[in-house]
Length: 391
Ligand code: FAD
Image 1 (cartoon, rainbow, N blue to C red):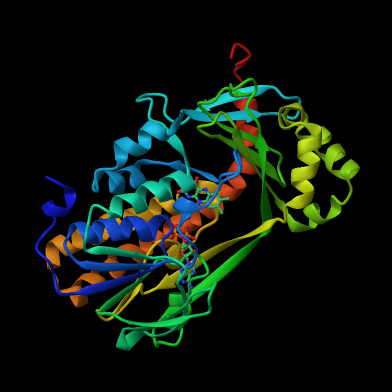
Image 2: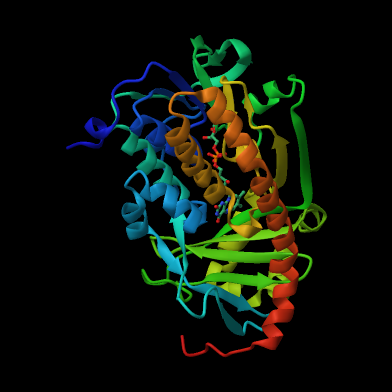
């Protein structure tokens, strides 16, 4: 029996999801499985048609929260087959010596490095099992009358405009959510955002004769106090390397020589792995990206609007929980709908009240781990030094 025929009988509520990233596409699956008519509108073109330069994918750490939400739509195994287990942190000190700090000494639990594009593709393709889920790409939400369920989109390529009327709109449109912006006009909606002084750029360690250039089953970290670099393994044996550093430090690195000297001084063991030429080229052509933490409350308006994922609670990435927490939103919404059925007024209110304190806490923990990873981790490494030269 196909998943589609397992879903409930058709329900009359029309649900519109704005944003077809990781959380929007998983939410479409969860709601499609329940039999709702779901329309997902995504700003970008279909990610499954776009090219990816090898080794330049952002990868993410998938952990228990996210895995559970994937299990609920039958996708955990598919994703874990692709994911690369990371059993702990591999710390690189300034001299290039490494120290292994396991995530879990007793039960050997681990997190998985998964490709963002691959994950998004799997989720979008899985929606095709549900004839009641409809995908609309190249639709950017421009304006909305949220209480009336009226949404206005534009095709960014043709400039054609579309009006959509819906019973419920779910904003899964990320940290800079347009839906959330419209909620600001509603009384009782609290909102705050914090930018940190650090930005990030992504670099790449290529494969070495089609093998990983470093031991693969770890999250590699080069903690350096005021800044840090991390690397997560990719399926194609490359590494996505992310350098987090204050914008003012990025600005100081203007010439090829500045870049090379900086890396030789702070990340000397990574230079031959990335390659001098590639390092300079990639660094020079990449603009550091901002990192923002968002808190708001409540996440809903009546039975009409709901925020999920980064739109509700964007966080700095140092706890590896942004996507995982967004996936957990899908689990929570499903549990609440089990309880309330189609009573969205009660369901959305309970979602907000159950979720906001936990979400704010994860945002705070992510901010704390910002200091832990680049700073405390350095002190830790001195206490439990253990050579892993045998890798
Ligand atoms: P997004 O992924 O931002 O998707 C939003 C979607 O909405 C996009 O497809 C966008 O095109 C679309 N959209 C935006 N505006 C509109 C509009 N007006 N109309 C229509 N569509 C629109 N999380 C983890 O759990 N583990 C990690 O290891 C991890 N690492 C990270 C590393 C970095 C450097 C960063 C920056 C983040 C990391 N995160 C991680 C966080 C994770 O990326 C986010 O939490 C996750 O992408 C949120 O998913 P989302 O679907 O809510 O938002």
